[in-house]
Image (cartoon, rainbow, N blue to C red; front, side, top):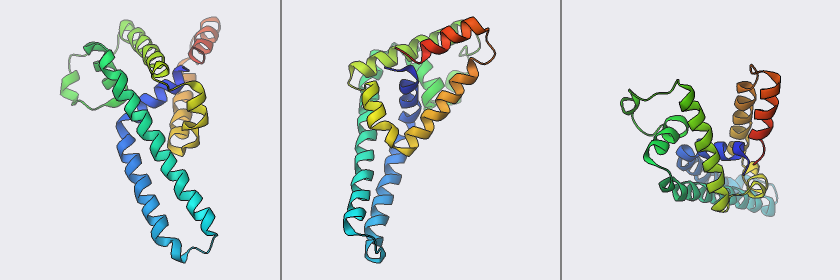
Length: 171
């Protein structure tokens, strides 16, 4: 699985419930306002169905992340939480090394492991492109992740930059 797709899923994980809630509210508003909406009923229904499908995809992504998390070691889970989830209190990380080269190498390896585990769990590049990128929230998050990745290679030497950049987009 593309490493950027995996990172997008990891960043989305902690806010998935909130996005699902927003979709529920939007579906309810569309249903309640349908009597004053003069567009064809089919279009209104299609809109609600699309939102429901987005919600289902988000449920699947969350379920798959929950499925793969126990496969990580405790220190890897801490790294995932520190970088992607931010679910634990800041005090938990007061002695956490986040500036060494070893930490950054470890984060890269963990992201690669997550990508492989997500793919083994059924979240393939094709699935992500076909279903996830149709969800505005995921699409915008993916664009931010991609931009951040591109900026992280901006100041590296050209040879290493090209190797690292191409490696991050394939798997």
